[in-house]
Length: 146
Image (cartoon, rainbow, N blue to C red; front, side):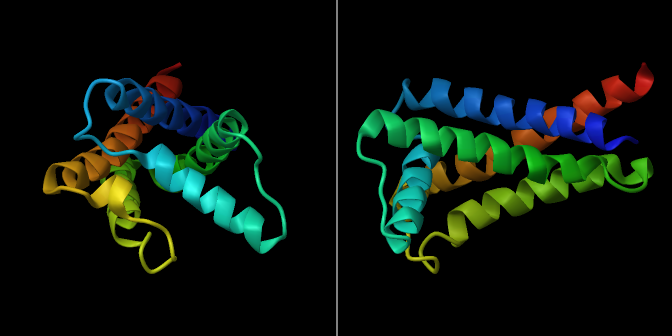
């Protein structure tokens, strides 16, 4: 499979993940706020280098761009290697990303509360990343049929 197809499918998964997140965060307070976790990470990295994002709108856009790029690259790994293992890879990578999003913020010095405040939020966080991985797998299947 070509790297371009993998990147296209990875971008579809990353976009789907973000559309799901952005839609649901407006509907309830009992959903993950991955955006807040990302904003915390961006500010801490920039602070380390002696900089910051001055306003909330710019911080949101910077975080969203970083999230789309990093998730695109991550999800593109689903298409690498033997296609016989596409679905196990999709589930594994989605599950790994989701568990990482729940378990890694605190050891990384980030506030874990936006993705861990309740058990429901933790489960949804993992589910979001699995959803993005499944969309990636579906797009890969479509691209391979053409």
